[in-house]
Image (cartoon, rainbow, N blue to C red):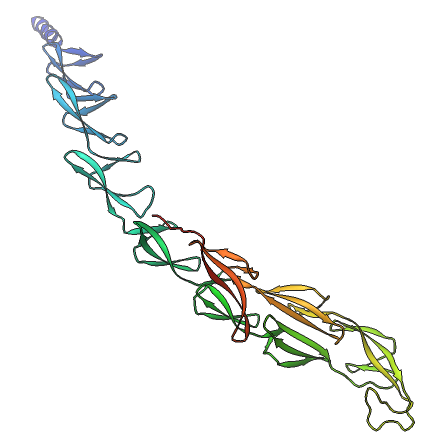
Amino acid sequence: MISGLMLLIFVSSVNTQSCTYDELALDDGGRHTDRSACKEITCSGGETSEKFIGCLIEGVCLPFGEHKNDIETCKKTTCLQKGNGYTFNTTLYGCLYNGKCMDIGQPFKSSKSDCLTYECTETNKTYGLKLVDESKMQNKRTCYDLGQEFEVDCFKYKCSKVDGNHTAELVDSGCSVNGQCKPSGQTWIEECTTYTCDKGTTDVLEQQCKSGDKCYTEGESWTEGDYKYTCSINETHSKISGVKVSSPSTPGVCKHNGIDRKVGEIWEENCFTMTCNQKYSKALPDGCQVQSESCIPVGQTKYSVAITDIRCNYQNGGTDECVDDGWKSKEGCAIKTCKVDKDTNSWKFESSLQCRWKDECVPEGEIRLVKSCMQYQCEIFKKHGKDTSQMKKKGKIGYTFIKC
């Protein structure tokens, strides 16, 4: 009984030495760290003691000796112990650029151009930005070194420095044709016409006449059915002339293309509307030794094919199409116009040339500009005896340059 009483007295003595902190029981000599208050709590002899273990910043405990960086102000806050409390030491630690703090020695790209590189430096606790790479220029988000050449839209440029500014200097230009870039000096053939590229200008080297899938040189003739065609090229255009080939007729009928046509019959062939009629009847006492247009055998009646209407035969995609006088068609940079000559019973296509500029055809006398403010004007002239078009350089109307 006595021993039981002594045990109760001992337990009671121990419990009287414990501490309570914020509803937390601590044994004698026990410790508790309260991060929310940035303190360490110690229980001794039933009493609690507190000491700071760091600085309380915006509800966060920053241990002594450690620091916090603010990237929006580029300031470094260091927590220091002061007596039983704490204090702060605030210093700059980098360069503020576009709302972001850059560390010392950290290279970064300019917000205005990827071709400019800066670095944060510090001298006597003064921070500043140093330009460490400016030997480049920018075009369409690509950086080029000084002296480096590059191509944009069929034009060749060189990165140069003029009056302290980086600019793209035009050094050469090709010819843009049907969405493709033809280098200067290259030749190619379109619609029986041979072209060449001369520093951005498309010149005509040789013109030929196109009929179907074939090309014919100047003066060359060919026959299709009952018609004979001839290619001719002058100073302004090329043309194809068609003339019906004469065929003998038999008495009472008109023989045409191996077919006997009755008098008064009307038909159309190769865009010619024709009829068979009686031309004339002539009797000579002694007849004629040689049959001709003015002399036929005694008592014979002459029948012939008469042309009542003429249209141009336009071959479109392998099919024939009859088009009226004055009808126009655009082929490449040439405009073909149907011309009917009823005096000679013939037709032809006349072509008027325009200048090729990038992906468009420019009429004679019109002006186009390039990015360097240079003017180019369409001119039609004769070169090597052939009709030639070119966009001729006329000079600048201003000045421009590309900045980094």
